[in-house]
Structure formats: C-alpha cells, structure tokens
Length: 436
Image (cartoon, rainbow, N blue to C red; front, side, top):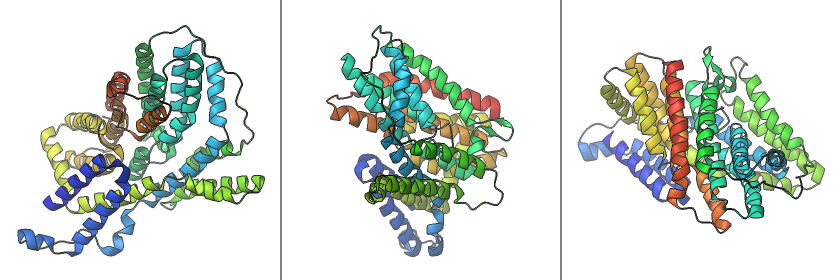
C-alpha cells in the first residue's frame, strides 16, 4: 500500500508539472502498476508476501469503455456542431437583445452555461469565445472578463447533466445513474436543479463584479446556418440517452454506442452532401485522443490503487475524522475537493475519490448519494478558482493569449473565487438539505 501510494503521488505531481504529457504519464504509471503486480517488490523491499493487485486478464476490464466511447462520440458531434455555426447564431440572437455590454457578457455567460450542460466544457468555450472577441473588438473593450465569464460558466454547468462533463460521466458510471437521474433521482430533486440554483446565484455575483456599462453591443450581420443536421444530432444525443435510461438489462456501453453511432451518422451525412471523403478524417482528427488515453491510464492506476488498499485507508481516515458524523464527512469532501480542484485536474481526483466516498458511506452506514453529489459539486466547481483549475479556463486563456491579451492570475481569481464560493456554498447547502 505504501509503495502504491508513493507511485500514485509521484504520478499526480508529474501530471501537474508536465501538463503537455499527461496522457503519456498516466499510461506510464499504469504500466508501472501492472509490472509491479508480477514483480515481487514487496518481498524485496519489505520482506512480506506479494499479493497480486490485478490479474492480467482484468486489466482492460478496469477501463470504463462506456465513458471512453461517450467522450469519443460526443467530441466528434461537437466538431460538426461547431462547423455548422449554430452556436454562433444562438449567440447572435442573445446579443442583439442585450441592453448594454455588461448584459451582453452575462448573456454569453448564460449561453455558455446552457450549452455546457450538454456539451464538453472546452468545446463550449471554443463555440462562444469567438463571438465575445468580435463584440469586444468592435467596442474596443478588454475581452478578458468576457472570456473568463464564459469559461467559469461552462465549468459550473458541466455538473448539471450526465453528458455535461467528464466528472459527471464518471459519477454516472460509479452510481449507476442514467441521464434522467440527474434531474430526478430516487424521487428527489437531482443535481441539475441544484446546479441551476448555484448558477443563478453565481451569475448575480458575476454581474456585480463586472459593474455596469452603457455601451450597446452591435453586430454587423447575423450568422447564417446552412446545415441544421448537426443540431439535430445534438438534440438526438440528449433524447436517445434519456430513452436509453429506461431500457432494462442494457449493455454497460449503451450510452457510448449511442454517441459513437450518431457521430458516424453525422460524418456520413456531411461526406455525402459535400462529396468529400476527407470529412471522415477531419471529424476523427477533432477527437481529443490525448484525453482518452489519459483516462484509460488513470482507470488502471486508480483500480490498482484501490486493490492495494490505499483508497480504503483514505476513506478510513476521513471516517475517523468525521467520528461517525455524516455531515462532517460530507463537509470535508466538499471543501477539500474545492481546494484541491483549484490546482489539480479534477478528472483524476474525482476518479480517485468516488470509491473513497462509497467506502465512507459504507463505514457510516448511509447511502452514498449525498457524498457523491458533494464530491461532484466541490470538484467540478472548484476548478473555477484559478486559471489552471480546469481545461476550459486554460483554453480561454490560450485564446486570449493568441489575440494579444495576457491574463494575470489575480485577473482571473477576482472573478473566479467569488463566483465559485457563491455556487459551491449554495450547492453544498441544498445538497445536504435534500439528500442528508
């Protein structure tokens, strides 16, 4: 267990320091864990018998292929959706009705949040950011607050639905939740509505932080959408995932098959219309294989860590500190998640902590849902506190840098910290009141 913990912590440090190589680090760590399953390292170092962490035939079974396929398919659909310019048209409609620049930023933030509830956060930022930059250039104002608002809103709403963020997909897999369960779960209000309350309060805080301006945003022309098929696909993903949630005895990879199937249909439709076979190449290139490899490696690492007893030990520590009090355990999980997610990638953290939360719930003799939901709220929203806390933040800052604008840490945190605290506090209280 000690060796496994050392390897895991070393992996985390490397993931944090060498962000460009995270996928290779995760795969390398997975390989090390696999090798140590068969090398008598415990006998050599500690003089104790070795216990196999993971049978070789179970290695690929530790990878959640439903998660991998869902992300793969959704990324392909999103690339088609962006190319259709429908998100830009949606932004145009909202901006035309904005009375001033502040409300235009708020409108873009809300749009970013709404899209992000059903689309990957990074893709959402890429959809909405160009519109924000165009408006800021025309009005000759600093685009930094606009893109920060878009990024933090997309992160927040990523926790609202099963397909909103990778962390939500991980929760759904761990808790056996389908798409509809994020709205109503076990007869109670689900995460979707809890997140919306936090979003509303955080947006009010954001407006206060942005101040008030009198300038009216104007657009020279409205975006024209010539292909509505990708929009139908996006709607189709949502509808089919909802319908699939009612299927009894469905395969574990059902949601993944749906997303990949719709991606292939969309790609085929575009290839037929454009009469260009290269569409298949461009769509598959749009998939972020780096993230998929990162996840695959982490699934193996986390399962190895679990088999070595580390996760059990962490859970026992939190249970001991909580002294049998569920509220204390819940509070520790939420606010530690906020703090850690401000500096580290929330995907490996959530992947690590989900089984820990399950073990703590077992020790305390309670249902794990309240701890699961607290973990997701803290870990997903906590990334909004710093520029490096979430991929969407890094993407927004990269867009600004290419446009000649450098974002200082405090510039981001001035908006991110109050926004995060408002959203997390409301989510923390609501989740406890509903699910305690």
